[in-house]
Length: 352
Ligand code: NAD
Ligand code: DAU
Image (cartoon, rainbow, N blue to C red):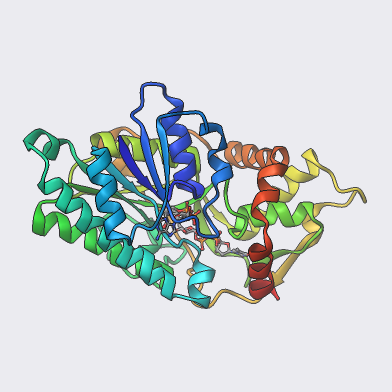
């Protein structure tokens, strides 16, 4: 077995689905608190798969995590569980400290105790894979080189500060206790099952619902977009072959300004689902108040993972974004399930 945390969220859910697509894969214990971002409908296709064991719970629950480890004896933990939305971290940072820092600490401690009790072969085989973000490196100017694993940590939002803190804990557990960890720092993901508070799914759904497409500030902020399926394949690679104690940057080699991302989505929708009035969805673009402390540019230099482990993304932005838009057009039931009252409350709070 492997233990996946946060496996009902966007990336964790995609990872579990991808992992279990291979009939030869080990089973997954999926521990998820089912916050607003966790969605069991994502895992519907696994209902009859005995290799998937879903456990509703918190990574910060020591008793529960200790029991799961003892019962299922996983050979690896992949830690996706987190509060992940920068704007929410600005409105309310407390949950980010609780889950991302204290929760990760608890998971590390329970896992270390479990690992200490394994025999030599079990110890040798065990991995704790921590999934982190490029945001820990801070913000780049237009001319700065992309982030490498050697960049210093300069987090700017409560979210990125909490992820940076968790990365430091993971690093320290390796250096101090010899606990077998690997960390991946990934750029912006997009793809199926993405909760529509984040830019790409929000824009797709707002466009289809004749709502404004909100662009923060001047829309010239740059992100490096990675198709979620490529992120999943990178994690599998690092889990299998990554060197203990190392960090690996994962990115899509796809730097785009936000305004260009939104215009691309509009053009794809113009083609796949034209507006009834014949106008372009571009007409719905609306510039709104900027995010406080908004990082200007992220860019990942993913050459280390390519050089050492042979991983490169398979999707370009053009192929990935088209698949993504099509997925949202094809999956109205999943969408209906996530746009609940609490989602509407969030939109009201954030976009007034
Ligand atoms: P998400 O918000 O979609 O999902 C997070 C999941 O974690 C949810 O299912 C939620 O219920 C669960 N969760 C939250 N608190 C928990 C707790 N205390 N115990 C157990 N489960 C809990 O996030 P995501 O976008 O899928 O991101 C997954 C991981 O990848 C996060 O660690 C995030 O920091 C990192 N990451 C995300 C991106 C991105 O672009 N989305 C990029 C780089 C790194
Ligand atoms: O870089 C990796 C990070 O990417 C992950 O660690 C985070 O978990 C993930 O949420 C994401 O963070 P961002 O803040 O970059 O993603 P988001 O989709 O929220 O925003 C992308 C860009 O679009 C960012 O520059 C802010 C802007 N934006 C976002 C929203 C929601 C808008 O202009 N308008 C919006 O309504």
